Image (cartoon, rainbow, N blue to C red; front, side, top):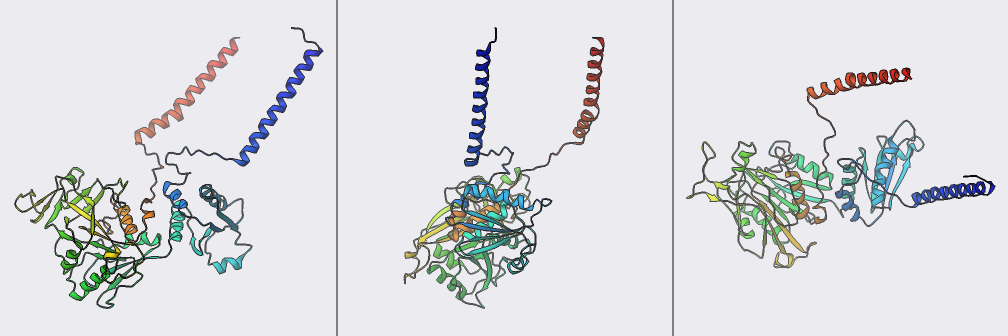
Length: 459
């Protein structure tokens, strides 16, 4: 084909048009990238994306959030970059989160007045409430926002003076670890001896009876009964054996206890030698256990039964497998089901009771919530320091407290977990990999180089 001036002009024109279109497309893509953004997280455990719990929490926060970060401005320190990257994940879900940086070197007076102690410390503010964060990650920030979202501190009162489990105790049977986790979520626990202060404080969210070892006096039982009659919420963690003077309280709630200790043969399959451990893997449709998928373990549990009383509506929370039973004899030697004295499974370990506050008291005392809630469990060990870390015990404990204190919105927020980020290989595999990378691959490259050199030399 002969190229003349006309064809040359057409080719130049085509090139100019192509260049203009290319520049226009690049400019359009640049403009679109400023107005719209798209991100994809391809990591195995989605570590660069907010968890579903954090997203649900942000959806429940109608007011803006203000975050002030006290971090030095330095190219050598990545503190500001890490803070900005994490907060931007939240801002994509909630645009009215405001992030402001303050350099401690330029505003030392502000640092002293705010009580800032470490570089990178944050002050998070929401609805005239504020909290400090020193170790920033998604878990701590979400927990902080969760506490700020609460209208006020939830107060749990543990009845004491009868050998009950201590909310701040460090013994294996106490609840120190569990209550420490709840404190991070804005729930505070105190102990109350009814002998010293024969009245339950008016700002109490939940009263807890946790495994007494000494009988309650009739006057103390009356104080608890009056608390229930006025619409109070109760968590009763009962261990197998005596009711320690609380029979009348159980009667008023419509609860009876199955004699003996639950024996679950399923635990032996899982390598648990103690026959007194009971497992629960299936749950009902109650808000506490709805979509709850973790197995929970109950050491030395007692079975419960419910009968209609005082307008209480009962729903089963926890139930053992069908082949379990309640053993009335000592758990020694060979243990077998005795049809004459033992109660067969499945056995209910926990009930959730509700009733309208209109039915709570004869004088129709005004209360904050529209209904009162009571949970009775036949085991108090499952959230103790010794067993809190087993399977889903801790998450179930959170759900129980949140439901009792009418914080249903937080039922679906589980504890955050992380996948393993380490590659664990056998020593033989490491040796094989070392052989491949240190000897095999270099030898292959050397041979390939020699072959190519010889072929070129022969040309």
